[in-house]
Amino acid sequence: MGKNASQKMIEPETISSTIKVRKFGFRDIYALATIVPGVVYLLIFVVLIFLYPLTKQRMKQLTIDLTEQRKTRK
Image (cartoon, rainbow, N blue to C red; front, side, top):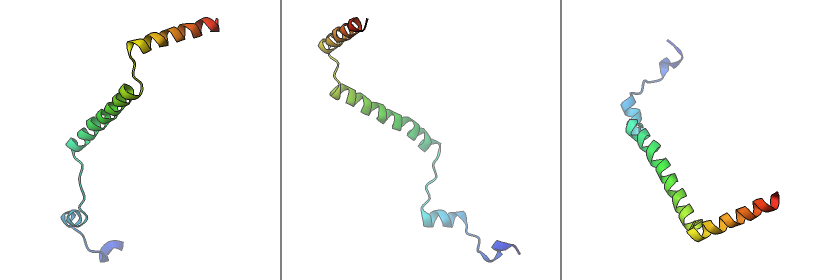
């Protein structure tokens, strides 16, 4: 008799039915690996569109500002 001889063996079905263990399968891992980055990229896109809009006029102004900064550094 070993150390655990007095303990009862618990069947895996009993454990999963009482604890409600969820097993992750290949589909779940694949979904997490594709959906999570997709949601993150979508959030970044929304932030860039609404909080940092780059119109043609804004791009022209940024170009002018950068060329002036480069001229003053030299």
